[in-house]
Length: 270
Image (cartoon, rainbow, N blue to C red; front, side):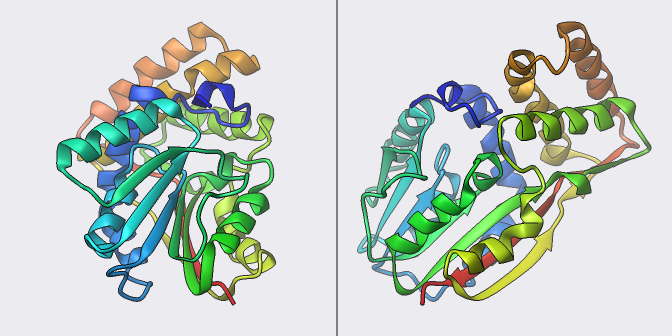
C-alpha cells in the first residue's frame, strides 16, 4: 500500500519522504543509539523495525544483531520499501529483510527480542493496535522501544509567524486524519495498557542554528503540502507564502529552531 493511499498518513512518501527521513535520522542518530542501548546485547537475535521507512533504524539494528541475527523492516509505503531494499544491497547488508505491511495488522514473525517503533503511532487512529502487534511479536522478556513526537513543544527564536503557522497546520492535519500530534506524552500509558511491564521514558529535543536541524521544518512542510490541500486546510497561495518566509527565516544565521519534543519509551513483554 502506497503512503498516499493510507488515509491517516499526512506526509508525502516515496523518494521525497525517504530523503526527509534520512535527514531526520542524522539528527536523531545519538538519541536513538542511546535508546537502543536500553536493550540487552542483541547479537544473534531477531528484531523488527515497525514503520521502518527507508531503513535508518533497521540498519542500526542489523549491526547490533550481527550476521548471526536478523532484522525485519515493516512499512506500508511500497516505494520506501523498494528504496530500503536497494540500500541494503548497496551496503551489502545480508541480515535485513524489508516487507510491505500495515503494522496494525497481523505481523509475520514472533519470538523476536526487540521491536522498534519510531514516528508511526502519531499517525494512527488506533495506536493500541500496533502496540498489541508488537507485544504479540516479542518473546517473553523482549523489549519494545518507541519514539514519538509532541508537537506543542516545537519552538523557534526569534518568533516567526510562518514557523508558527506551519506547526498549526501540521497539528490540524494529523488530527483531521485521526492521528494524535501530541502522542509522545501518552506513551507510558499506552505501553502499560498494551501489557508491557517495567516501562520507562525520557525526552529529547534537538535544537540548533545550523545544519540538518534547520532543514527539518522546511522538509516536513513540503511533505505536508498534498495533505493540506486534500483536507482543505489552506490555499496554494498560503503554502507559497509560508514556504518563502520559512526559507528566509531558516537561512538566517541568527535564528534557532527546536524540533518537536521527542518522547522515548521502552518496556518489556511479561
